[in-house]
Length: 107
Image 1 (cartoon, one colour):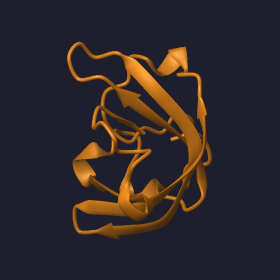
Image 2: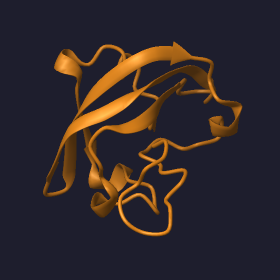
Image 3: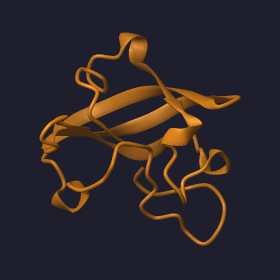
Image 4: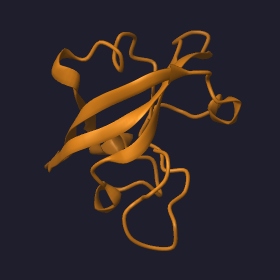
């Protein structure tokens, strides 16, 4: 999950986050949302865009409402920013979609 919203991942009130459906970057979709999926949370600077911080954790308590997805962020620890993710645009990405069904890899 990538964003340039400062103070988002590590300072969410109650750990509750909201993404609009437009933030789901294909092949990620509402149908692929899966509770407790291991997740990498990425923070970028705005201008110029560059990697700042990264955390590992999970997404829980997912609730898809109309065109929004509300979920709880559970950070496990800060990690070194993965170089392979340095060019990802803001959004909810699935990196290993698997053949069918919900995602089971890093989002």
